[in-house]
Amino acid sequence: MPEGPTTGVPGNQPGFPRRNFIKGVIAAGATVSASAYLFRANLAGQDSALPGSVERLITLNVNGQERRVDVLKHETLANTLRYKLGLTGTKIGCDRAECGACTVLVDDVPHYACSVLTHTVRGKKIVSIEGLAAPDGTLHPVQQAVVQGQGFQCAFCMPGFVMATVGFLKVNPSPTRAELAHGISGNLCRCADYNKILDVMQNAAVLMRGA
Image (cartoon, rainbow, N blue to C red):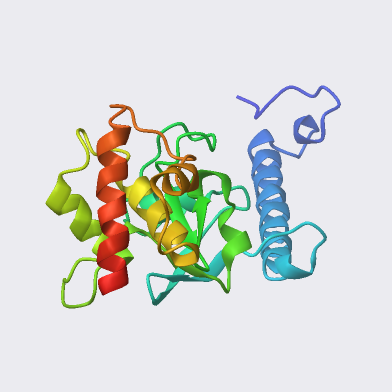
């Protein structure tokens, strides 16, 4: 039985079996694919020189440690901390910069981690809730105040409130209740236990001043 009818296609010409034609196409395709891969790899190695490009493998200073991490150009700091570095104390609530559950410190200033692109904080000092306690396990004064006052119910929002309070007390260590309420007003509590939260955070200010 012949390899295939002659219909004008190169693989169907007399003396040119269809099987050989298919093999040739596959071989040519593999060569093109390999060339494309090498070309793409070459460009990947030069990403930093391309307009609008972002380096994927970056180093972050997180909780006093240098951490190498592979991030996407649109990846948020909240996702990097939780899913790349395993720091799940940073909570994702609204994921739209409204609830404050994901608050972390960037160069001592509170930021919503869900609205910060990871690649924009290279070279900056990032502190999450896991980085507040001392190396020997001693709690930060704000953490200690939360434990002493049992200032939260479900505590989902607690890490964000703690980080916001730590940042605020750095600039105003002796706030009035009204000043403290305003200073951490960017954080929301699902349980709406704001009076207890303010009581606890005012005690935290006292503990920080005595630390």
